[in-house]
Length: 444
Image 1 (cartoon, rainbow, N blue to C red):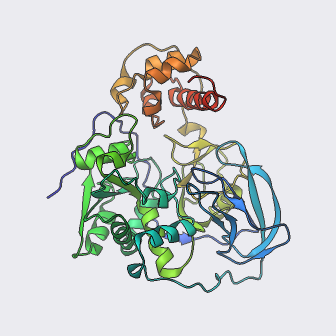
Image 2 (cartoon, one colour):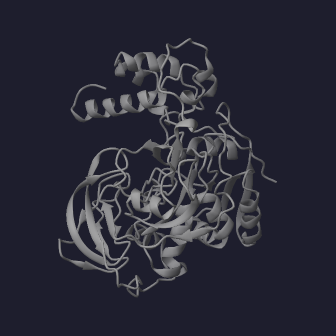
Image 3 (cartoon, one colour):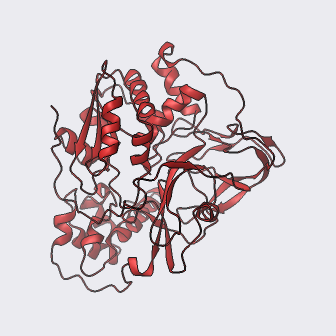
């Protein structure tokens, strides 16, 4: 019997999942307008294939993939292309986006599609179907799923790990997916095992989701070697390298990808999305989003059309409470605070957390007291205190030498810092500065 081996370091933030963990998934009404950023996945942004005035049906392609590390974007509602222009993005920047005026009289049924039987397709054909369906990692990183299913030939993949840890506070979208749709998740696992030619899969689920564990165990097929593995609750167990260590006991070397140790990691939502392509023919045009926090009136887990503006989603959830102070995309550990609620939900949006002033830390930052708590918390064994000192002095080259690239921006160091130093934010800025220098041709 496989047992979780855990991983070293990490933290135990309050879970705050009780508001939505038992709430069934519900579908939100279609908004009046959909905004589809062309940049909502890792790699090259998609290229628009529509023009202003075009009418599209639900599921129609509005932008095509620009190369292998890219995926197309599809209309999440029937309507008319109102504009193709710059629009606020949830990452705090602006991005080119296709704006659709939703047809209020449409029944919002997708066009009939030919649905191929994946069993009769070659792995390459399945991978192409996954790319054509616009599937990306739904755990937040939004890395194109078909790329992960196409590992370099020099690596022999022997295990698929399905990430059901969902260790971020407040978020329960993966939890509800496993509890309510275990068959679809496991159908996606079966398809991925076929594509990669592997005989073994492990679904890692933290023990604070007993109903999801039970549902997945009950639905687990007997003709495949799929293990449902309960995990000790710990943050950031949902990070790929931490999950691999917890499941296999193998540490992914610095600077290497999971495939280097024979493992591919996929999110449970991505597995379900792959299955849906071959069940319904529908591309990735909607996703399950947790809306939670003390600052929203009616928390829930909702099926949300991709491109729904945050303000429209929050209105469906009763709107903001009077003492709402901050809206965060994702969880509070790794999420991004929003300055503009017209920014839309993207494929990688796992949750929307609304915090009140009472549930937030103060903004005052004190000098580092060199207590060492950040060293004990860092799951990849960096020295956040030293890196923070270097970041403040903009010594990015020295930070690179101290393995800044290994930092996952998990926020564990910031969470335990008694001086309230925003270490994770400093490291994110430093990584961006190094990328900019490398792009400009300067030595990193």
